[in-house]
Image (cartoon, rainbow, N blue to C red; front, side, top):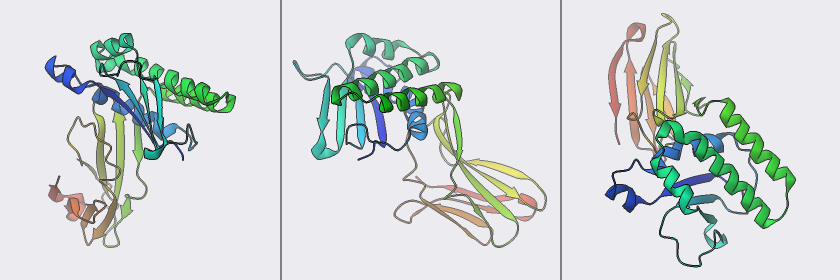
Length: 236
């Protein structure tokens, strides 16, 4: 099974008690950007990897645990790494978090068995993340649509960065006037993977609609003449 998700999970109880910015939020755009760029390959046979920055590690618990029955793996960080993650602000944490991802993936690769090709892919992806300055604005092609009535075009984007975490927007363009209007589909900042939430889209006359995986409308926007926005609705 190919690796699809990496989560860096902090100690939620400790973070709340000490009013710390959650490690999971701090790391979300970095882990998601890495996975956007990471080739579709098998790491250890599981779909999800959780990197645990928690003090709840059981005594004598293994650093790396492969739970094949659940298609998931877990990897415990050391206390010094946890303390650094908790104290770094989001701006300074990006490079450190990316280093942890590289260290953990390479270590898992080495534990499973020597595989120079996988190590090279990991390091190449790390390099790409740095070159992109930890930021991505990706057009979601399956959601972006042109209207059959009028000359409107709706382009939906997933945006990952340190300021907003993960936010989504739609850019509505009027092909006649050339005017473009940007509407945000999520609050800013946000730290949730919305790819399964914003699942399908369609135009109904001059109304652009997005539905979730159950077919329930979660966003709609209606445009009038010359790209004028006359209705906007977000439901979630």
